[in-house]
Image 1: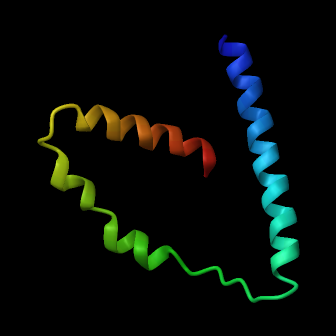
Image 2 (image 1 turned 90 degrees about the horizontal axis):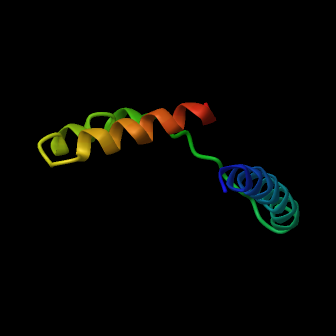
Length: 73
C-alpha cells in the first residue's frame, strides 16, 4: 500500500507539473500572468502560528507540516 501511494504521488506530481505547464502556455498567449513577490507576505505572517500554540495538538501538527514542507524547498 505504501509503495503504491509513493508511486501515485510521483505520478500526480508529474501530472500536475505537466498540466500546469500546458495551461500556462495557453493562457500566456492571451493574457499577462504575474508572479507576485511573496517575500513580504511571508515576513508579515511568519509569527501567526504563535497564536495557536495553546491549542491542543497544534504543535505536533505544525511541526509535521513544516517538516513535510522542507521536502519542497
